[in-house]
Image (cartoon, rainbow, N blue to C red; front, top):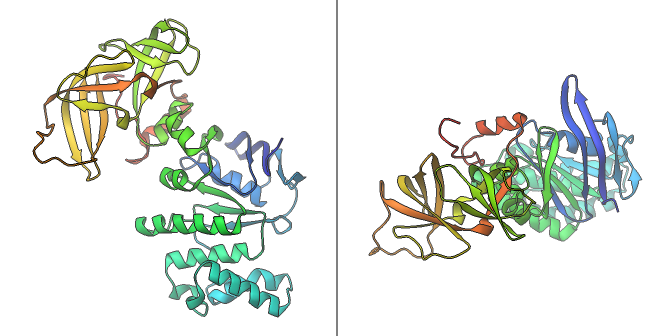
Length: 389
């Protein structure tokens, strides 16, 4: 059954540029659904199609079972919050919030009552008579939210609403957005390129790349069980290893041959045959690192390497360990700091170990995905590949 907001085979071109390529997805009533991906992946175009600012070349958009594809923006029960908030600079906070109702000709007493309710919701009562240039970025965002919500839309579209804020304010506004959503209960469609925003706020996420949807799921599914190399690399950090299936271990596990490694046991989340080529993804926190080899266990893989670099990050330490042709990223959480413990340091020989269930066999990037390699640090760039590859 189609979702509350349903996109069906949406295709959109701008000249020779394919912005959306047969995108289909469902947003359920009352959920926070995020469109996540790098610049140019099509996420904002899809939001603009929902808003009515762009018309798809192919496909249809449905809201609560009604085809809204050909409706103009002002006839859709959706409202959009833009990155720059688009507040009227000559109007006060109160007047900005009231604008939509006044355009509709709502009775003055009703407007005042609704504006007071919105001011209380976004905690802006004491700024009601200020102009936009007299309030902070976070306060402007609250006003934009209140102005959108006062029209009682079925869906609130948020286009990179936190991008102009500094880190601490973004973190605080994420909590406030979540609280506002819990109180009003309407559907949020949230566009962002920031994985942290999407992971912390969303009920579900659609990861987009090159005009298509790579994967849809809950944040834990997207992170813990990626379905493509792009998703694994874009959401968090990961390590990639190229290998082939050399044996099956029952129905659930495969044994992989990776050059210059001992054979690796991996959960067979997708059917694989002996000789199949695979792209293995393992998150940095899935590795255990120690000076001594762990006790042998059937489901635990181990390799030995040399520590090449260390970064202390307070809550964790990040190690880069050279294992033959790979430079592996390992993160170690600090649950308790022991000053009497001899720390692992540069050039130390160490053992890395990980459970067979913590590796995922994925398809390698399509050639169009190579743009991922130019993402800024912290956006999930693969941090190693076989030397010379």
